[in-house]
Image (cartoon, rainbow, N blue to C red; front, side):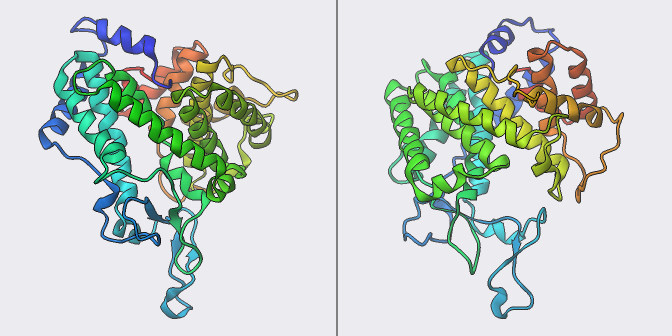
Amino acid sequence: MVLSGASLEQRRKESPDSKYAEALRRLKKRADGLVVSAKTYSVTNKTMTPPSGDKHDYMSQAPYWWPDAAKPGGLPYVRRDGERNPELSKISDSEELDRMVKDAECVAVAYYLTSDEKYAGHFAALVRAWFLDPKTRQNPNLNFAQGIPGINTGRGIGLIETRNLYRVIDSAILVEGSRAWTRADQDQLKKWFGDFLKWMLESPVGKDEADERNNHGTYYDVQVVAYAVFTGQKDIAVKQLEKTKERIKSQIETDGRQPLELARTLSWNYANMNLFGFFTLARLGESVNVDLWNYKSADGRSIRQAFEWLLPYAKDSKEWKNQQIKPRSFELTTRLLRVASIKYKNPEYVSVAERLEAGKQDDIAALNLN
């Protein structure tokens, strides 16, 4: 799906002294630590209970909303874009979801590259706990994601919190055939994602997110396409990718700027995040023979143009003058550069990525697996 099968297979055949050896060593070290810890995650771990009364329902609070000092009890909350409210930690679902995704990907890649069953075993424990075990599983909805105190209990925008679940799907594909992850497990996981996709397409909350025009709309498409491909509903995937082309037309200017993201207080981070969503959709499009890598609107809008617009700022040959209230993050930038180096056949981009990483390597990216 999104991870490169060709790169994975090549890494598996690399000699011990290849240029990827150090990244693989770090990946295995982290995976070993995860296996030893045996830590799993669940929506049922939270201390708060959603309005449904069912802890199996995912729940979170809107990150950029704060108590209104001018109102009794601070309600309703008011928005401060780019400033995360520390109250978010009171509800553990979002943090546990992110950790589950990262841990599952790490041990799945480690299993694929080494064939060591201990890694597949921990992957199975992680994914069964979050998706399959009746005692701990998440219900396949996000009815109560990113609620705003005093205003609502959940909203479509909350779907951005599951934008990385495609990585669990990729990981499940990598451990297929292991002793720990059975065909029945894979079928149950497909059933969960099929149900979640149905909720996304048919629920009022899901439909609300589908109408979003910025990165929220982009990552709605990522999820619909990924879940449709995984569950064998390729007609839905192709139809959604046609909508993605319309998003490219509306979100990317002819010079490559992304105005809706540049208007944010964390403009660099959001411009990279949104473009990474489009790159992810381009990788998914390969599964159903839809080419977004080279797609251009009639007036020249494209994801390649958006990448080339960002490139001088990544190289520091241009100064970033849009609002950025926190230091720029380069985690997604380096992934964009490494993928672009392959898709657009320019090895220079890898050199830029390596300079930006500066000792903070993303091992999945460094192994050129995206």
